[in-house]
Image (cartoon, rainbow, N blue to C red; front, side, top):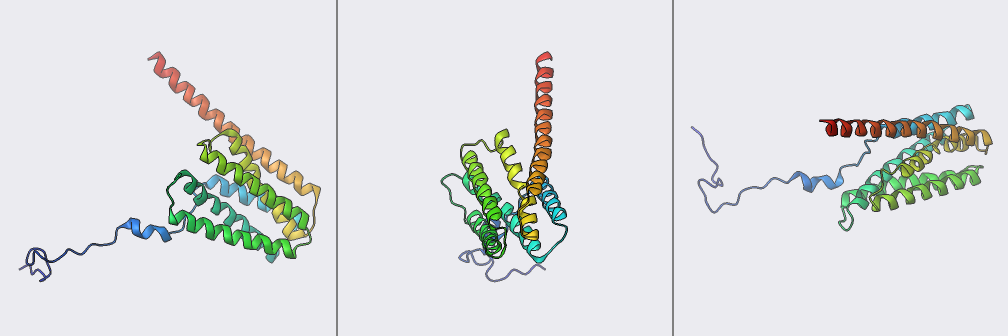
Length: 211
């Protein structure tokens, strides 16, 4: 026989049903993780080219890699929050602040303890400008504009001079050449991908018009 508890609404109509917490009330503390896998590859490849140019790996190199990854992760919830317009989402604000705080703390520490202060400062300013442009274009609903894609890729490729500066502790023109090379390679791939999508869309529209 099936026995029901006394608090069951069937036996006790005045009993209030137990409500389980909805998933939405638990999501605010869950980490936000960017799913842009291509950007991960771009960042790691650029960073490794800087490490190869420096010809060694130190504990400062590990901190620089963590800084770059946290800075990249901070952009994701920030962009999601900007897309919300006037609606504030605690989850996006929380993780943008945490990722950005870790990246900023490491960046300041590296700036204080690294001889290549000028190069690091220029890199930080360049990343801040690229992030500002990205946020502005997201606000205008132009995040997928080709200009924003190119700027973002060149900003991600700054991982190469970051790795070199924090590892070697000096500024070198060859690492700037590595940054340009990485940026041009990845930007050319992005342009080819965009052209492929454009041609595919044109072909589909032509096929529909013929039918």
